[in-house]
Length: 83
Image 1 (tube, rainbow, N blue to C red):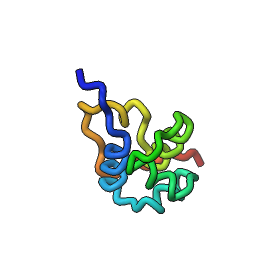
Image 2: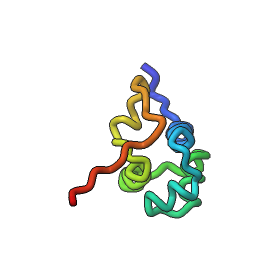
Image 3: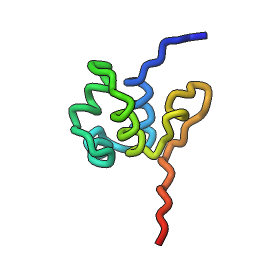
């Protein structure tokens, strides 16, 4: 079992597949642009709370993000709202 997981590479791949720039994802997630950049380049390891914010911006669950064997959507799911 491979215990190494490249959070930065996974985030970069998912963000790119969703068609977002780093700035767009940062705005959607409510985090500074530099934080997205620093995570993607593995300069910092995000806290669980920050990871959740970022993944909410992509509309991806934390378990899906960390599941390497699953395929990930190329376009984020639209959040359902009740009217």
